[in-house]
Length: 115
Image 1 (cartoon, one colour):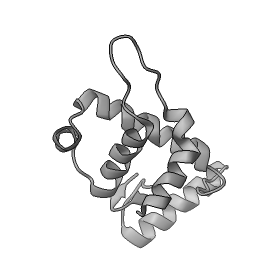
Image 2 (image 1 turned 60 degrees about the vertical axis):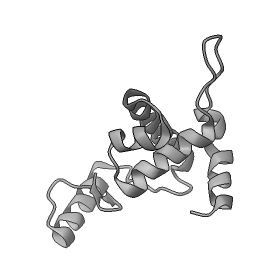
Image 3 (image 1 turned 90 degrees about the horizontal axis):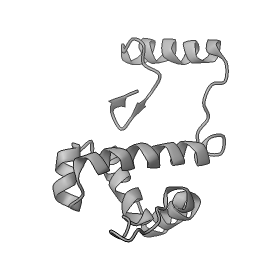
Image 4 (image 1 turned 180 degrees about the vertical axis):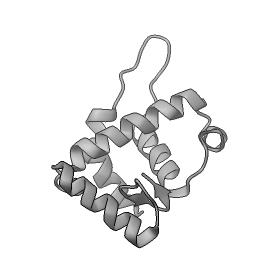
């Protein structure tokens, strides 16, 4: 991903993943939260591997990935992501995926990860 694509994505979801500073510590920046999530999605690295790469605890990485993915879905739904709206459409997607890739009860895949 190019730096400009990262900045575009950050402008899109940055405000929704930004955390406020407290008297105890500064928050993990929106950019670092996005980078951790993209690294997880693109590489399939474990949270433990990411913990060593980014020096962020596993429990925090787990929460970051969930929050950023939710923000990506909310912001990109309709514009970048088209999801079926009816039960029959979901069943059609699952059948096509099973017929093509022989993966039952699967609705898609991201970089080789079944969803």
